[in-house]
Image 1: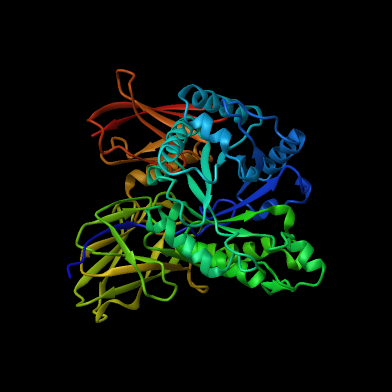
Image 2: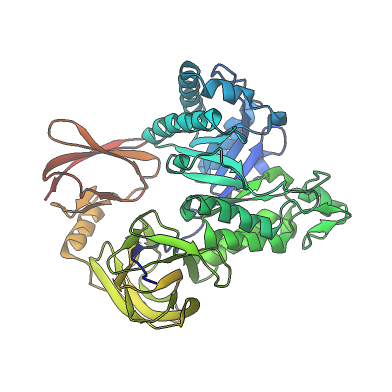
Length: 530
């Protein structure tokens, strides 16, 4: 069996929850709960539910608009994003979506109305909750609608997400995966009391990833209520249910241990956790959101010193294949690895300068493979490891080395110098007693750029550049957009400003102008493509 390939730029997200890529998304209903009771520090995104469309592309009046306004103010003051959730169960009536998505005029009107609504309430994006489009024409109409929304939201630096069924969601075409920032998997309401088991969560993740949804866009949904009574977790605990169990008097719910297990599952095989809904949580030591937050702190390094990243969690790649994994935890691994293939994750933050232990979970039938770790597409090499024979493609072992990394944000890569091995995960740990060091391995262009940036300049480097253009801005670019123009004024690149790096490898040599457009200002810089 011939194995293939990869250069890995993996998401080693060693940051606190406020800036981590791991998402904690909570729905806040218009009809329940107080925005003053939300634990903002433990969330990354809040979805206000629901805004309802009309059949001709209009919008019904939002319920409790003052509540939405207060939510946006409080969330933004705490550095959190607010999206409007559009649709919802609505007693199973999705007729308005069916009608407007099938008609170009109605669809255009709806998109325009959504742009205006987002601007009116200063929102950070849209969460589409058309839960059950039909197969065939309806599925195609859904995809067309999402494409239009994706273009308009992303051109404005806004988010587009969607809530989808846990499994059997074939009417959500795989083309939609490239249009959204992430999908919220509604892994609940499967049966009666056992409606949201750990097994069902795993099935949901496997289903969507098996269809091609990148792990980086998988956000696992958990319930803060029980069935069949639909009682909130807070109400169940108040009438005697254990916060550490999952069944009480015939009602099934998710207690603290299950919520923590699912959050770990979301870290291992996805990139976020979603909550329906925040007003149903208990308080104090019984809070399920606090239980989620404990895991987040442990896994991101804010409450611990290590993080585990699944190999299949890539943003871009060349020549990579995934397969079912039988290692502990199941899920998928990357296999068929030959020399020089690669995967990439951008904007990876190492919070401190120092020594990091890097572990790789590998399998190889015959051995002979070699992997190496690097930063920024190989500009900084961190060392190589031989991959031993484990006697089978699903017989797993862990190999380890220590590397020194300067504090900063990088692309982080694992490169296949020689193939013939599988990779399940990579774990990064900063040893508790590690001596802090300051290395000088960065390129001269990087050092010069950092000196310029410290003087207040907005810097592009290297300049001239051949493959990738880095940005040192000294400010958070999230929410802005970047446009690159050639000398004729034609736009050749448009991207959301989030990664601090642009792939310019496909541009023809010449002089270009980069324009960053943020909420409060714009910046224009020129660079040369070699």
